[in-house]
Length: 371
Image 1 (cartoon, rainbow, N blue to C red):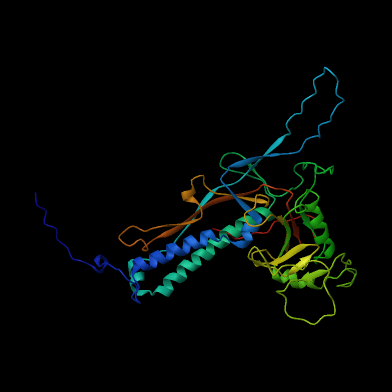
Image 2: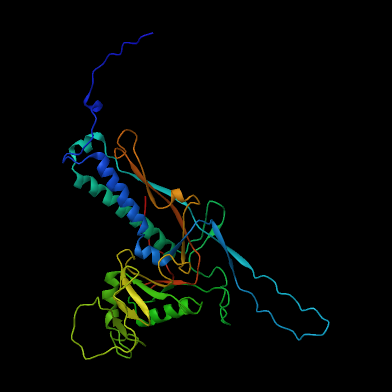
């Protein structure tokens, strides 16, 4: 049976194949996918220094054990064996996040390539905020959570368990890595104690580096770049035990001082370095909430020694920021972006979070990483 279709063709039936400035939609789509591939290969430098990638839902971490004692051998006796240590299951969360480009055919008809690229650049910036913010929130928030497999997801030590012994050093059951300054200023004594708080667990002592992460405004208010061993930098404040040594990134200056030993590098794993104090490299970032300081041991970008586990799906096809093409002959129309990941602290003693406050009780910041 023949069906006679009637109707009027509308402007919605018109095929839009290029932008207002003449750029082909297929060409701009290729440019977007290429940029996304490069973006995923160059994960945020800050996130990479604090985290490592994993596909595990949890990891069993040995919690130390008494050292086995040897016994005097006998001619016919059999020596006693040793037992395995106890293990703690440390979980990682996992969630899916997405955002749509919402570029209709009418928008594409009137927009130029600069407008389209700007929208994509903003989405990449939002993904950077999502990843960095989620990792920092996990470090700065002691709240214990449960992941999709029922495993407990921890932050840093917060008086909820006794840390394993390290080289004969025993820790109390109320040992915490969420500290406050008990004052309105960050002083040298807080940084010195924070570094010791991490080093006593064995992190940063044999390999890797210490990072001192601060908001730029806190760098200024603390006067950290003027800390000198035994010299007062604020009235009534504690005297530093070490000198702050600026990197070559600092503005040119005239000085009669000279540096003994290695000077801090101008950058570390892609992050500009302001200088160093007691060997900790000072990195300032607006991602760090004002009023909070992180001291962390890092093994480098994506090192397994880094504190936070960055969990991705077991299927590698779902790793990184993915672009989902829109329906129709031109995938750029109505396409959207997806990121699937989760976080959890794997090395609970590898970092310290310090809040600059008079309050003795630590309060976690609110980092807006996603809706």
